[in-house]
Length: 114
Length: 112
Image (cartoon, rainbow over all chains, first blue to last red; front, side, top):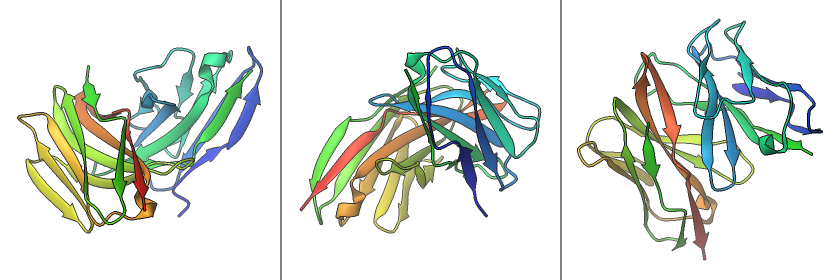
């Protein structure tokens, strides 16, 4: 099993450009999440999904959109990138079969917006 | 909303014991997780507590007191490879879903 994978690993954008980050998991997990991590700020939740076809806003959703058309994929879109969106983005997935189900994280995408 | 507090940085000596504290305020508490994150890598799961008490896993233990909104991660026999950031995450109910919220992490530096 590959676990959670993210594409791309690195990207540099100019202000105003758009892009989509792809997250894929092969563990048949129901829950998927997108976080951003900035120095001194920890992991902040952008959007999450509790199942195929559902999405919900997290703590810092402004400037981002998401889609979960297939259970195994969770896409994060930036329609018009801004320098404040320079960050490391982590995708995660989890199940709720038992309370102890932890999150599995992808390797991260390092995004720089100039 | 939730408020999760951890110390920003701690240092310890190889072979020693270190305790990393996490305090939280939340409604609908549904469990507390600890993750380890090495620089430039993804977080990985260490432990889970939902009931009061101590959970032990090898060199790592985690404690929870729900009434005090308090947890700690105890690392014994510290090794250089334990130098990492340790993230406390509190899961709570939100509109029928159970979503974790992370603290800012504690950077642990282990020196010889």
